[in-house]
Length: 528
Image (tube, rainbow, N blue to C red; front, side):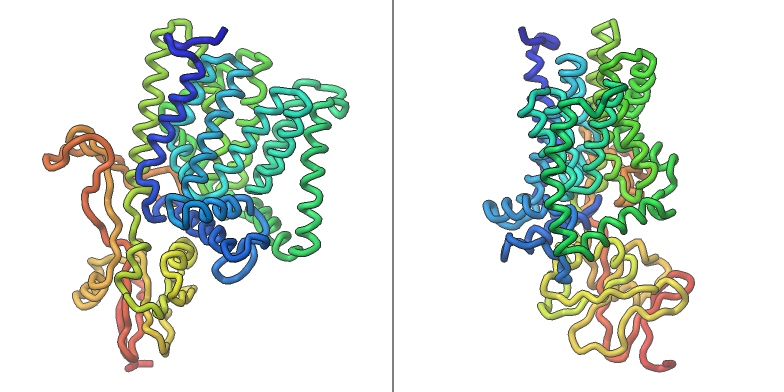
């Protein structure tokens, strides 16, 4: 007999969770790349495009170098591009499908561990969390490896030789999608150890699982070491070195606290913490798996937290732990009310962060319409080169992009002295203080500026907005709430436009400088 929840079949609640997730992720799916990790979207889309000429090769970057790791997503994008054509929407549909699969996997894992009621709660919570929504619709491999890893865990728990073999194959595909996918294999091993405590090596499930993964992984590793040794080893070692470096451990515990709080949304984060205490206090066997994976991914983020999406694998297990705590409440009306509150608050935060961090970032898409010439050269500052270069190359495929470094100190020149093609210097808003510029310079900047659309979240005339503190992280700046007479309805609304990028076309003999006070100026040949 199927278990019901508030009179609704428990399986239907998983479908409701999938509908909720789709409703949050799919609107404006065809928007230009930009905002929260838009550079990753452009990067992997270009890798997928590179396979259109020859899919029997490794994907290549715009500079012609091969991508020998994290290669599964480019091939999936290639299939989508062949069927639907190259577009932002066709690229994002791939990752959205994997996000929905991850929600279904969480439902089935949680149902096996705790029952259908908790499974329904977990799938709804995961569908509403901002980190699952923002990363889940971004063209990057994180959702793919998490979804495949969760599916491997689900099949491993289900048992049976066929399911265990499939689990081993999916665990390898998770690793193929992104190197941290190996953590799902480590988590499964740790779970079996916690179950058996002795004679682990003779566990038939674990042996079948590991043999399957290794039989697929060894030829893949051998091929890369034989034919792509330099690129493959360089990719792996660079990530390991980053993890061990100060740059890779970006503020450590503080970063975990902030990213978990905002990435899960405040109320869901508190429910996760309460669930941790509840699960540890109960000491039940079915709490072991979510606790092991949560601890492992928290430790992973503590060591390697350069970007917020590295904490995404925590979200499914945080949802399970929070749901388990909810299902333990004896008063069912309180339980239901808290469940509704968690889902609504998570969905609100997700929409708020979509408006502030994803919607309307069209400045890079608008660049070609500003400079016009097909054979133009674009010289990018160090800030754009380090953070947004893939957006520049994606939307300006015919332009020559010149990367310039070390322009922040003193009066280092941003532009080469002589250049024969129509040449522009591209500056980002964060590098400028328009008020600090003289009138001539300000006019020249605004003459060729690319604007982004500014979005906010409206509820019947009350407008909420969150300032994005950094496009690499979930943590946001000030949260504002205003009453706007000219805004009607409910949902994301466009409030206006804001200049984000500035193109400076230098005249003959001119150079662009950045002074020590941060202001820019244009100088002629005199004085050199």
